[in-house]
Length: 493
Image (cartoon, rainbow, N blue to C red; front, side):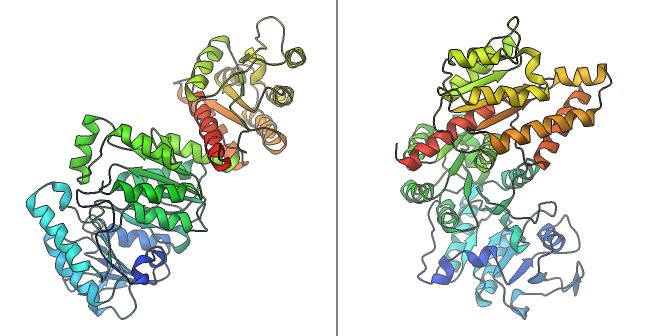
């Protein structure tokens, strides 16, 4: 979403206070310019979100209409009238009025100005570019710009954000996004999977501050352990590459690249004027920098989950445990496509598996077809214990299909709670005692609403118990493969 004028910072500044982004994420005061009591207009939703999140700094609605109270807060005609310090201004006025507001913010010495307003370089019109260039000219050496055409900053620790439903609990994930919508959805989906964020930024056209600036900041941020990026294009690839390489040397960096195809590239230009560039060049650059390329935010979130709850695999040799012959064939294909290898199990391992599995109707090589035996909670731990002792195995992927268990719970009147408790205890024991990484794929294998509710309830209960699971074999296998490659880069292999 960076505009044609973006990529590296366009604003020259020697002022260290304007290079340090701390006040953006931990502002002493925030001005919301263009706010009103009408939630649907201008920047009002930002004011509502800051109130709902419990922001404790100075919060100042600004509206030229002269309203004295907006959302229960004293309001001001101009940011210049605000009595306290303002470190972050959110602007939601028409594009044609933004230059005057920027001039007032500069007079107030506001270090960071965020433009929710669209209608600039992303329009690919002469007037849109002129308006954006004017903002950059006004700001140069005096303030920093986020956007235009974006959602701005999220920092749960500081109760700063742009969506009232986002959590205020902090975690170790930072997210950088050219898309405001993707920033909102990523935070929501990551939260649903049990992740929490340290910070996030939606930066839109990147007229000034860009992905490179935020990469450098998050790479040095002690509160951030892993960085995710949604990016469409950059103006200065070398600047971005250097920032990416430096960040990836310190912590995992995961990239979701938009605009991979001719159709996507065209869409990116219309979105915020991004020059997406050749996807082959992007792939090579990401690999050389030591970052990880993923296909979508689901893959990004699952990799972040793996980094949080699994040890790094010592290799790609994987024992695949399935519950059905056809499932094991397809799952083996998916593991191979992800880059995992399925080595043959030792003869003694196969013999020991017979203490759990019947000889008829099961396969004990690799992949292991446990038939229905692998569904039952009491056998999960037994199978993992046997397989993890095999010297050929470096990690384990358990493809868990719940529909058979769900059907039997209904058929025989088994307590759902009892079934859940047994599975949870078994998987908790695996998590706490397994000597090798064990990834559980709790697969969606039915469109029956009651069955899917059963699966999601179990996933959520496991999450509450500290056990992360993956939605598919394909997803789990990619996580293990990505984690191994990250470890190899750390070890210089």
